[in-house]
Length: 507
Image (cartoon, rainbow, N blue to C red; front, side):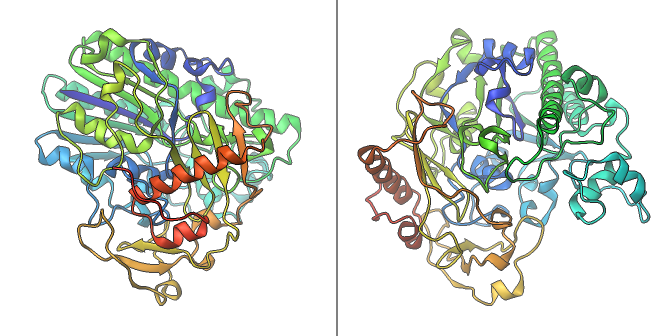
């Protein structure tokens, strides 16, 4: 078996023609959909970037026990397990969070890896005296605070070194993936992961894609919306959405080059291809930009997944309606190579669903550590907020106390005690560390917005514009959520936080 796993970041479902969009032309994503099984009811789990990747490695929710952080010593990575079973694994990625404190244990689970520099605020190029005044003229202050915003300032410097299309990290990612295939496509038993940070913000694409998307380069650059309410005028919103559309066009084009390569070398008969993302993004829908701070609308949580395997060629183009999640990727990748998931895995292999729909779960949970508990059965979604959103009574369970790009501060570590062992920690008792607001958790920076518990009927209101009152549905969803939390051995305080009794876990 040979497998290519293509992972984009923030590839919103409603920008893909295969999911009904007419906003951005995506001929190559749509072309793959005709070869693959398309999952229509696929959902994120833990957000954002690295919490989602921990789920991809372990097949378990992250957000019930901790926030952003590395793989733990007791975590069982499916990629490490594949390597131990004789499957060669290779990662090509420009996702710079792998090389920050809070993601530094993921890439080492592969047999080899190729890291492409230059995305977002990757600390790549040194410029001791940057041209501040020129930057102020180039970049719109509604997106860029120059020089006060360190992240955006770093990106402005990086952008000075990305001029031609071949310089863009996404292009280099696919070039690196094709290089791997040139050297190894005749071998057997390998997994190649091509992982692109795009179309994550900032929405910076080569000129030909910006021109095609209608970006007006005569104005200061508007391509990095802040995670907050929409306050910009219609023209500014249009330009930011156009810049995002340009990135999607680029991702589609280079994904198409991979499809062309597979066509030329007749790889469809012996190579599986899996396409997905970690989460979506609000692009002014519901009057929001971003994710995580505001409610987890479908634009963020309902995500694309398409799978082709040599054994499923007869089912090319079929749609799967079963309720699936990010936690299902690990057992699916293992299953492609004939391996069973670990007993502690709570996700399910999706390979049987390529031929026919079947029920895997009653509900899917998704969210961010400390935020709302979101639950869907595919028909209804419920955003369930705790009575108090502060960190009071909330703990992170970890042996790797790091946030996104920094270690836990000593002030937070002073409150650490030894927690209990969970069913996935191999008998190890992790640290139990108070999740303080001053702990600099990225998900609490600035606080949560519009923290209302709301129920939506997706059949009648997929856009989630009209909350409904159905106490019976809410009670059913929360009861099922309690069972799912018990199955993931969630800490007792999580049940208390969301005002749920600790249910018996389903077998």
